[in-house]
Image (tube, rainbow, N blue to C red; front, side, top):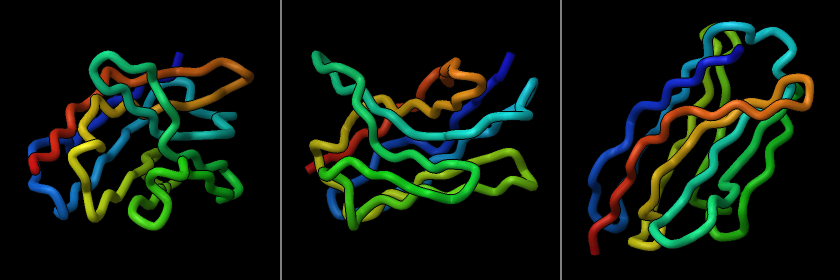
Length: 115
């Protein structure tokens, strides 16, 4: 099992920044992809950004140029730096990890952007 714990969410004004962190523990060997997803009220969960163990990244069009995903393999953690936040970025953000084709999820952290 892989356990994921997010931190760093909160309330911020539009134009502000937040940094989310995801700490992984448990059977973390052979995790080959990590990411961030979000779910706004009444909407489906959507991809925000992913990063592979090789460092390849992928972003949703809506966050390109504003968000940056990174990882620290020495700490078994990955991060989402969110700049120029907009009210439409308001959602519960979940970190994820894929290992042997199985997706694991954290409990989520709320991000609220006020206008």
